[in-house]
Structure formats: C-alpha cells, structure tokens
Length: 142
Image 1 (cartoon, helix red, strand yellow):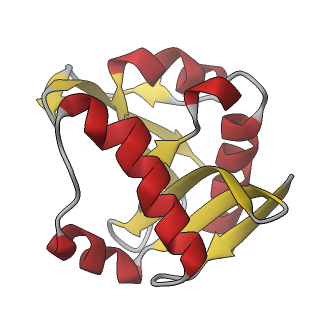
Image 2 (cartoon, helix red, strand yellow):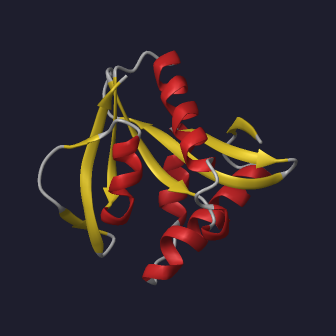
C-alpha cells in the first residue's frame, strides 16, 4: 500500500470524490455540490493506493496557523479493519507536522469515535448533528 498526496482535479481526485460519495454521502441521501468540491483545491488531499486503485482517503483543511482539520476520511466497508485508516491517519499527522501545524481536529461521526480514540484523539465538547447524524469534535496535539 502506498500513501501519497492527491492533486485536485486529477483522475486520482475523481476516485477520491467517488469513494467519499459512496461511503459518506449516498447513505445519507446527500451528494457533493460543485462549490464544495471547488473549495477543496486549497486542501491537502491524501490517499492510500494499491497500484492505481484507491483504498482510502482523507483531507486536511487549514483552520488557523496552528490547527488543521481532518475531513472526509473514507475507506470502503469491505476494506475497513485492515489498517488502511490507521495508516492514513499517521500519514495525515506527519503531513500536518511537516506543514507546521501543532493540532489536528475533526468532526468525527459517533460511529468512528472509538477508532480515533485508539489513535490518541480526545472528545472536546458535546455531540452535535452534522449532515443529519451525530458528531463529536475531537482533537490531538501533534
């Protein structure tokens, strides 16, 4: 498995959009707007690949000089539990550190909280609803 950056607008980026749509949006009856996808051109986009096949993805969005937010973590259901998400998280943390960030935060779906806690993330605050489902703000010092 190779972990690498993805350039906005490439065929790898289209694979990323398709995976995120399939895993994160379609089950909720949602889709991405062209405006949402256009905003991602300034984000740090990452993927885990086996040859040219995308196995998982995530992105980092700058919040301020010290903080970056993990977004859109997606691994196909049949590939979950195989270490892809964990490898992507370690890669994302290293990329964030390399860019000078001191803290990584996220809006974690309630079903993913345990996964992130195993990687050292803590819940900060009360649950809230985003894209129709419960989420928690989680963060970790880098």
